[in-house]
Length: 194
Image 1 (cartoon, rainbow, N blue to C red):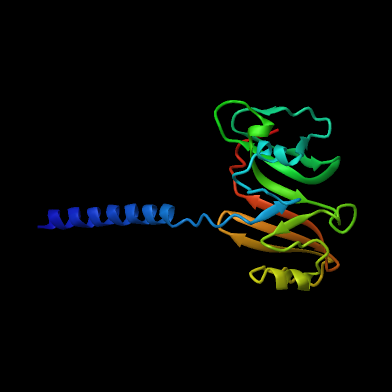
Image 2: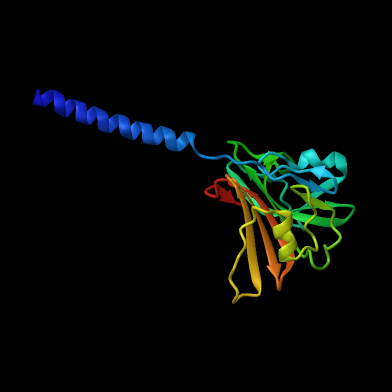
């Protein structure tokens, strides 16, 4: 009888651990990708590739780094997306395959818009239905009600975040004015950086 009880206890413990592992893996929230339009062209972080944007006149620019392909399981953030000679944003491209790929065929995992209060104030971007360029912190909160506001009063730089599972948007403000935006999809940074 005691032998059967020990067996039942062990079986219960194993089944409980198995259930926890299964529920943790199954319950991970993937989230919803942000709706990002760059000059009217849809760009989905975690899905789009630079080749998807070429028909709309976009091209990549590595600023002379000569990055034409990425080796297997690697990533780079040294690529920019441009159109008509104007840099729109920086791109983080990932090659998660087991062979080298041309940069045009790598997945865009992160997009970074910069100098939105200066040289790039005239960019045509829409993020979840609104163009955030030129917005103040109060206007950002009104446009994105789920935005987690940085409440550090001691800094003139603030980072406000909007998260949805493995997707995130970070709005960087300086003295209350939007300067930069990062749109990200999580990826394994254990890959080799190029």
